[in-house]
Amino acid sequence: MKILVIQQKMIGDVLISSILCNNLRTTYPEAQIDYLVYASTTPVLEGNPNIDTIILFEEKHRKSKKEFLNLALQIRATKYDIIIDAYSKLESWLIVFLSGAKKKISYEKKGRKFLYTDNITYQAAPKTNFGLAIERRLSLLDPLELSIPIDPLPKLFVTDEENQKAIALFEKHQLKKDRKTVMISLLGSEKLKTYPLEYMAKVIDTIAENKDVNILFNYFPKQIKDAKTIFEACKSSTQEKIYFELLGGDLRSFIAIMNQCDAIVGNDGGAINMAKALDKPTFTIFSPWIEKESWSTFEDGIKNKAIHLKDYKPEVFKAKSRKELKNNSSYYNQFTPKLFHTELVLFLKNNFS
Image 1 (cartoon, rainbow, N blue to C red):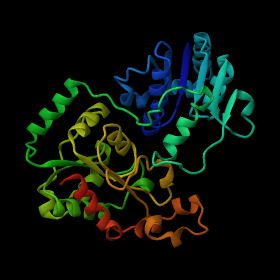
Image 2: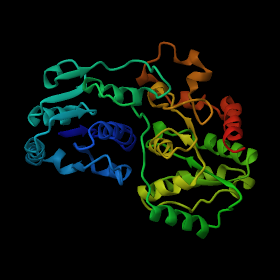
Image 3: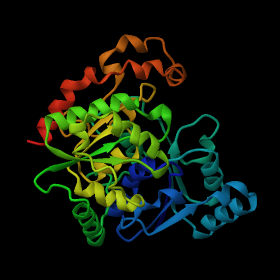
Image 4: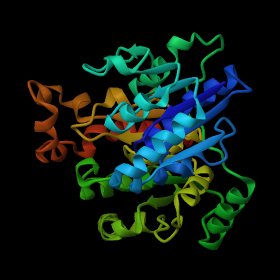
């Protein structure tokens, strides 16, 4: 049997959709299970024994109709028995249409039902604490009627060598071994997903004041200006606990560093999803325009805690569209650290006692 899973999107989406491959492998141990993703997302899939081949959707496939057709024909030539399309956009529709697969599964979308043998209704609300992002992916397995206990947890695989390099990095920067270490998801993938910088500094101050911990910043080199702004806004006593220059050179390095940390606090995004896949406690701050219900996965209020302005000021969201919330920064400005101070302190107490 040959199975292809499609998820042409960002790192967090690719990591979460990898649970499809994990559960398929348990059910069909001898199957060929391939995964079609953007080239930039492959670091979160390295070492995953449940994926046979990672097929790359590259920039050339976007820019050239010929290259795109070659990729689609390559997939057709593989003669997949099952395709699960977790992306469900124009690029994947064309690939599925040309695939020749016997069973084609995706979400139900108007005008595209003819492409698939099984169209799954897009779930509107979560039924468990897995979160909608997980539950929607798992619903794509329903037509296969798998006879196994479903494992909803995304997983990252870190090698011994990667772990040792991260430990050596901690030693090089002289992190205090008698302290636990907190990673800060400092900045979002864009400004609209980034908690105001002066507020983030206050969050970090709260962490430093309540627990004697090592503090690491997660940011890209191109974001160093904003990272320094946050650092300089922190109290001097907090700055003494921050190891500003301890930074992974690439995504695999970050994963290994995160694996040596004890928790992560900060902006929702790929870093939070990777920390959860490494079974680390998470405290996630959501942008006002993002639906917390979709991406707040495995929230139990203790190990995984997520907060949203709507939790504290629901009246702000009455009759407001997602577009209105996204285009008005004043909603983020209302999301002051004082609103969730108690929850953050409790999270630290629960996970650093």
